[in-house]
Image (cartoon, rainbow, N blue to C red):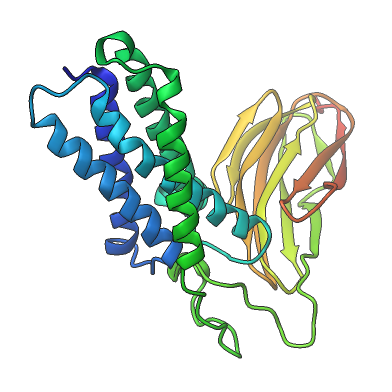
Length: 305
């Protein structure tokens, strides 16, 4: 007997494996040892569930119990992988559809897979003869397998003396390049300007927001949020990332800005009511403790009859 959680876990593992392979086949990204270990654990889950679903007469929950150590092993490696990224030991490319970094996507889908497996075991409960006390043993075994994979992973290749020829999103996971004799830092400069600081009600103007990373290392997860005055209405936007507009707040999706590179955002507005107003822009980044804030004043005069 295989319930819906078994099938959900199987298809989740298939999605995880397919996404991992697409990063190598379609995006031509080089998989690091930690990526390969995660892929191998997921392949194991696909194999166990795939064969088991073709065989009848198994105890309810047994398949998920057998696959659980593999899922926890992948979780352990993915968590360590993401830890290296957040501590600056590794830089990794974005995953499929640029929805977060590849290690983040891996960790999220492994968490989902593990939840399906545990739910299958607990739901099978009295029928399969398992209880929640059955879960810790395979979980501990999986974490030990993940620890063994982490300890046995070979070190990453050395950083080229002159830096990398390709950006990380076209290469793969790697140690960040730091210029010799300098401490790698992120220094973001935020500038806001407009094409006309005095407009008449009913007229349109465009604000330009420019975020420049003048530091020596990549600025990660840079998010721009613009608070448009109530006296104005947003008419259009232009940016290197997707945006969301809600209640006079324009939020541009997070993106990385490479060292000595800039990102430019534009917001087109229409002046609706007269008054002295200010566009407030906030920049947040994984590398900054406090947001960078800039304001740009604009005077809206009454519409001439």
